[in-house]
Image (cartoon, rainbow, N blue to C red):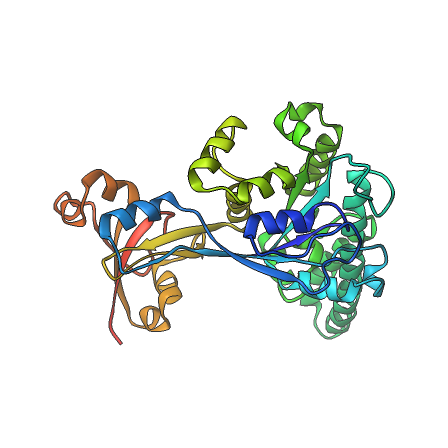
Length: 364
């Protein structure tokens, strides 16, 4: 999973990126501090994997990973190449989902690029640049489809859909808020739109607001209202607190989070939202050589999941021996789970479930 972190200059984006990844990206109080995208790869926390490590004492332990890309701050006119616009749009095109950091804190010492704190305006600034870029793409697709309609009327439905979507964008709405069927979404895959990418709005709050009653934060409520309209996720976060947490050992971190009334860090919460937004789950492989998590899309069948490990596994798939994580933990050992009939033999049509522990049988 690749998440692109975007936001206007000086909203706390690079501070949050550093805190989440400990990657040491430069962070300063002036626009375009981030020019080339910084990349940080982090392990996806999974307590199930930790328990399997305790059970098997493997030679190798491999959690799933998540890639964060800290993309250059955006200014108005990016879709026309202003500032670092072309670079910004090219970088954002490569990510699976967007973490849009929105400034919801007041601080006279940190200058906002537009001179005041206004989350709605900030979100609109970035959305508009993505939308303008999308309109340009759609116009070219519509022109091609019109030519196809002249030779074959079967393309008329596609043309009507594209024109309806373009009208939606021209009203200033992101493509992700357009009500489309699965078939229409499939049509759009050949013209991937930036404003159709799933979004998590990371509402960057002051420490006081984050620790207090969030319903009292007008800025946070504004972000929530926009996220609801756009079918996006929203996550309250405090970049400064995350920066503090990132330097702590596990024991101090757990104590600090507990004092804040939180069970997990901002990183864990962003990962959870990201998996939910993209429809991702993990299956596990476990044994003395290696304990490992594999990320797949919800609905993936066993042979395609096997292909994540090696193409030969998919090509020569025979069956999958599957036990749920909870059943294995309840039994204590794989042998005990087999005795109780909890290890199932599944065929090519089996749809993988989150937390499945699998041994694939194949022959090539």
